[in-house]
Amino acid sequence: MNIKDNFTLRTVRKKIIMVSKIAGLLLIVSYIVATRLPIEQDFSFLLWLCFVTLLVLVVDYLMGRFISKPIDKLSRAARKMAQLDFSSSCEIQTNDEFGDLSKNLNKMSQNLQQTLSQLHAANNQLEKDVEHERLLLAERKELVDSLSHEMKTPLGVIRAYAEGLQDEPDEEKRKRYLGIIVSETERMSNLITTLLDLSALENGATQLFPERFDFVEFVETVAGRLLIDAPDVDFDLQYELPEHPVYVETDKRRMEQVLDNLLVNAKRNTQSGGVLKLRLKGHDDMLDFSIFNQGPPIPPEDLPKIWTKFYRSKNSKYSGSGLGLAIVAQVLSMQHLPYGAENQPGGVRFYFTVPIAK
Image (cartoon, rainbow, N blue to C red; front, side, top):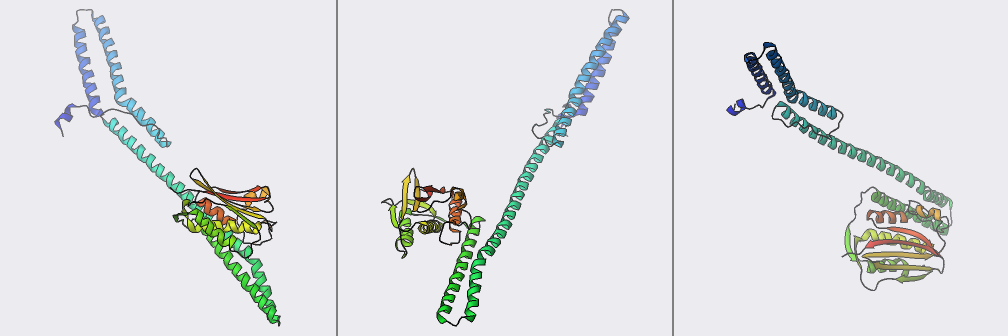
C-alpha cells in the first residue's frame, strides 16, 4: 500500500472517521475552554451548548455531503437507467467509493445504451429480413399465379390443335396445325423467359454492369434493326438525333431491352400510315430520349397502370405478353433514371433521361 494513501481521504470511511475525530476533539476543547472562561457558569454552559449545536449542524452538513447527496444522485441515476433513460450521467466528482461507483455506473450506462442500440439495429435488420422474405414469397406466388393465368390460353390452343391433328386427314391442315402448335410453344417459352428475367430484376437477383458507350450510335443501331430494316413498316419514321457522339455510362444490354420494348410498343400502336418520331436531345449534362407514335391515346386512368405486369390496352390489336413496359420501368428504376408516358395531340409519347458521361 502506498504510504501517501494513508494520509489522503480516498474513502468514505476515512472521511467519516476524520470528521468524527475532529468533532470529538472540538467538543472536548470547547468544553475545556468554556469551563475556564472568566464568566458565569450558566452563561459559559449556554455558550458551549451553542457551539455544540453549531458543530452538530456542521457535522450533519459534512455527512450529507459525503454520504446522503452522493447516495441520492446514485439513486436517481439508477432509477433512470431502470427506465432505460440514458440521457444524463451521474455527476459525482469525488475521489472516494461514491466517485468510483459513479464512474462505473456511467460506464455501465454507456455499455447498456450501446447494447440497446445494437439490439435495436439488429431488430430493425431482422424486420427488414422478414419483410424481404415475405416479399420474396409474395413475388414467387405472384409469379406462379401469373404463369398459371398466362399459360391457359396457349396451352388451350395447343391442346385443341393437337386433338385436331389426331383426326385430321388433310395434310395441309395438319401442317398448319403443327405450325400453330410450334408458334404457341415459342410464345410460352418467350413468356416464361421474360417473366423470369423480370422477376430476377425485381428481387435484386440480377446486377447491372455499367459501361461507357455512344448512345447516339446505339439508338441508331437498335432503331435501324427494329424500325427501318423491318419488312412490315407501315408508318412515317421521323427522327431527330445529335450529329455528334454523346457518351453515357449505363448497362448497355439492359438499355437495349428498354429501347427494344419502347420501340416495339410504339411501332405496334402507330396507326397505319401514321407518324413515329424518335428524338434524342442533350441538355445540362442530361440526355433526353423520347418516342412519339401517332395513334389512339391511352385512357388517363390507365397511364399509371401501363408499367405493371400483364397490362394490355383494350384498344390494342396486338396480344403481347404485357411485360415489355414493366421491364422498361424496372430497368430504369434500378438506375434511378426518370421516365414516363404522356398523351399528346394525335398520339402518345414515351420518354426517359440518362446522364451524359464526363
